[in-house]
View (cartoon, rainbow, N blue to C red):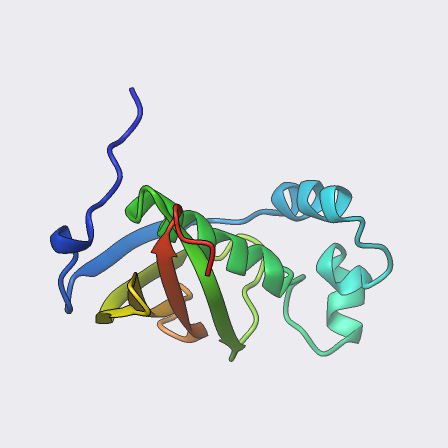
Length: 145
């Protein structure tokens, strides 16, 4: 059964999004790398190459972690689409780290008649470090802006 779109009136400033937990593995990274055709950058895949790059373990590509944020937003904001997503990568996510993703609605208004929602976003690793912080702007799917 398909979920009903979230109405603008049902969204409140301060509403929490998530948390969602993910544990990306080497296999996850390999599938992602194949799908987006990542070549080279062996520190994403191999322990020895990660150590040579000064890392303790191979890391997850930043865009893969961002994909998890997009999925969380899509699941929460049924019937809405991302107008923009800005992220800052603060610390690497390593293979096998369990990450928590969450967000909070910080603003909502109508811009030129288009309902618009603003969110702050966080990805935190299992050591309590903020791996990614960001912001998102969402509008209903029917809007072309």
